[in-house]
Image (tube, rainbow, N blue to C red; front, top):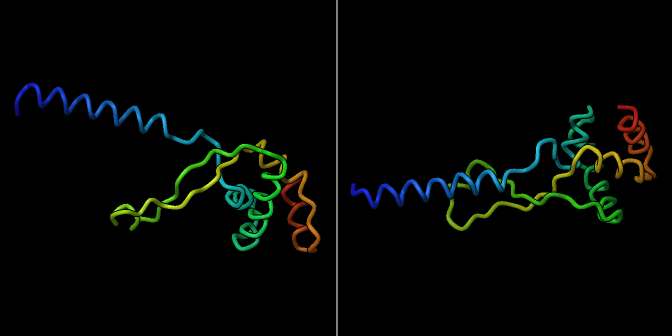
Length: 117
């Protein structure tokens, strides 16, 4: 390997390392459902409430960090880009929970649980 090739390789690797650092999500950001699960809700209930909270966040004009989620096999398949996900901070999550006004009894109980947690 020539010296020129080694320099180009090192430079390309440095660019990729910097790009990975720049594209990393901020610490503490999660999806709405992940925030609910971390608070102690069951995953099925958290998924339903997470969707409602995501809609409420859009109404409140909360800006989420957009990212990509991949399953383990997606990285090996050509042309697969993953699905778009929205990540929220703890403060944004609590703001959406405060504004959330559910009708179903189990969601009302879950909201009270989230506010207490």
